[in-house]
Image (tube, rainbow, N blue to C red; front, side):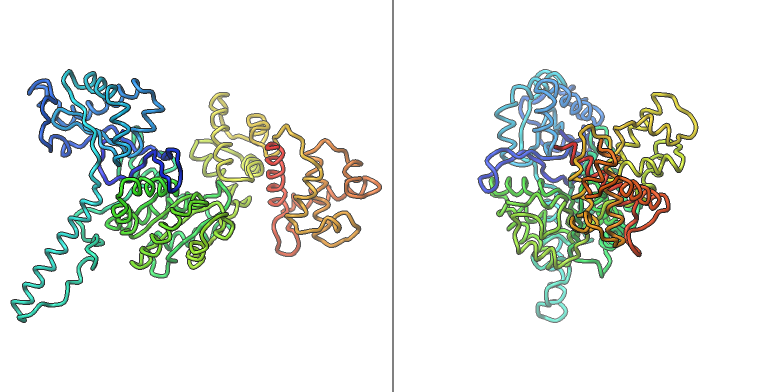
Length: 571
């Protein structure tokens, strides 16, 4: 539950016949148990809401009101359980102490009705324990701060236009054309409001924009920074495009669509865009949400008949950033709404930044009109980090944790974690914990890494054997070599490397002997296979490449090893 201090987007469990019959759970914790003194005691005191005037005077002090809300949250969480509390009271629902009463503000009527029906007695008991006997609890639907700001801006705009017309009439005797201030539709004036507006999305690690979560830093510090992104050959183009959008460059693409495997840094780039734009243009309206949150808010708006307010929040922005856009797959109503949202934003010259696990063309059951819009912008794939990039990540993460790794140890961790950045983060976290537990001091070498991480941090650390046929198939697909050429007698450079890679990986990931590997490759004796494996090992040690200017052999081998081990573990 939160004591709101800035505009906060609704994050609610909701359902609709348009998309789903079951309640949809929101995905972030946008909560805080602090309250600002200016928000306390602004409304009239409900009858019978306090035990005595003295109690009311003491409780309405900012520090006491903050304690009341915090104690109320603790009591209610204990009474109904942490899971139910987190589901209904920590996702867009807020609490404040107002003139001796605890006021629960729900994001929409659906949540307000549910809370009132199911938690009325528990809330009353929690309020009496936290504040005192006679304390009442009221459940209300929150007034959207963004709408109030938009209305205020529109009113100011109308007043300014009126003054301009009067002056023009006094001077020329006729009405002058409409003022250029603000928008013709009466919407929010960009960069002219008394306070900047920022719409909150969900961070990956807690907190919300402009608010402070329980035990978390403000939203601006929870979003990742572009300056901390490790740039390599695998993500250079994506990073450059992200910087353009974040800086608000005139030549930045209208729609930036980043896609790639899980854990390659797409969300880091998206959060970096939002953070930099918010910091460099604090008066601009920036909204950062997930596709799931967009869907839930849309469903709630359809149910409550509040689509106009929903569209105001989403369309009157300078930057709209949406994560996990592939979540819209098979949701035709949400896709149609998002299509119109993109078109409306495009008319204002604002920017849209999107992230997906797949290329727009490869998202199944996706509107072709949306795919066409995405392709009209800039679609960039974020590749898995190469070995050099992974080594830089290992070095940076180890330094942040106070670990002194030798170059060989860094290289070992980078080689083991070829799949994603998250694997590297997990390996370094585990390594730091084990070093602390064992009380190791000084530099950490590869031997210590092997001993501490064991098979848990290794790419080939699966206890499930890898099939030899899977290795042959994976190598042929990655190196674009046909199975016939691999098993034949051809001596093309790529084919020779492929045979050596099969032999090398088969010895590492299977229990087969060289004679057995030789028979699988159609060879009469094992000496040729043994020689091929040795040649590949030499190429790896010499940082050789596949063909002229091709991929590094070491990198391809690491990634194949990782993918094969993961595939075997999932069988």
